[in-house]
Length: 456
Image (cartoon, rainbow, N blue to C red):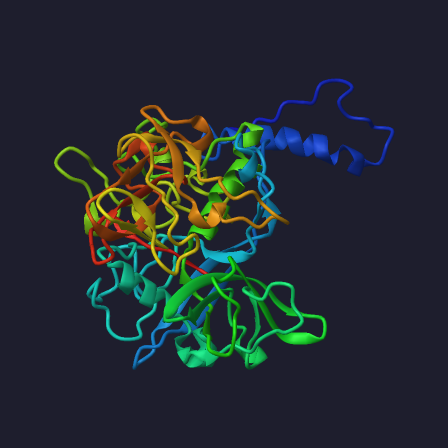
């Protein structure tokens, strides 16, 4: 009988590599390393080196209802980004930032009934009141959607339970003994602590903030937000705490900085993705480097592929190069972020209510150039800084910097309010990536190359 060809060819370790005079478990690391090296060349992505492994990330799958009159069942895959401190940047104020501490959608969002062949049956920008967004692998992403519709679809996850007091603004209670009167208050009930995203109305303006501490010794109702508000928080101010929400610049920066901290500074690449019509610009045209075609928007006259099904590419398309990572942060479709920018015809600035409101963020150079530096004007104090909440470039050149993936930035100075998109799409090549950002789209804009992603 003919001998079967072995799946893996494992060479015998060199003499002296293993110590047979010690218990076998002392040798496991070396045996494991030999296995990893040979497997790394046979997983469908020869550029991925399993011997240089990024940390694993915790996953969960939620099965909840939305807020529709006839509630939809939502399947939501998410990844936990643990707290970490950034490292590896050439700009000192980008290092030592306290980042992470949230769940993020593992894939680009989709409609509740999305499949590998169907968007899900709902009109993209008019899905119906209360309809929530799902997040599933190998399905058609939810595109052709405005910023407001995407925001609502994410906040509809879980129905009324996704917001404190079912979305009814509640007066803040002053925290008289605190050290941060513009950032601390007490909620009306511990049941209101449903998430990490909060809207506080003060003086007629709605401020969007992240909760950095909930509960403390002797006071379970305690909340501290960042950044602080313009004035001391009083009972004249109201809050609404939100669980599921559109990904924020802080959360997106955390993902990009995670890639820097745990991958790029150790010689590994930033996540790849669908930025070259179904594959990454750095890879050859071969099926093992490609994602699965989205049949709703397949190829065009000159390309077999454009959009791909969520999470369907090689492992190099994942944040940590593993199946348990966050997928499609580089390309496929642009993703709305919870950030708006105002142009007065001369400069761009952060819109009222958003972290860093009023800060001039007009990039230097020409729209379409590549990033060489990121906003770093706020020196971290105890790991806290506005830098990740702003998450916009301050340096540009034609070639860009490998430190920021040679990713691009595009903007429009025509007087209007714009919403930020990040990540890139299937045709942006080297300019797409985890640092890429576009500031040219008004919030009402809908296109087939933009989707969205949630966080919690």
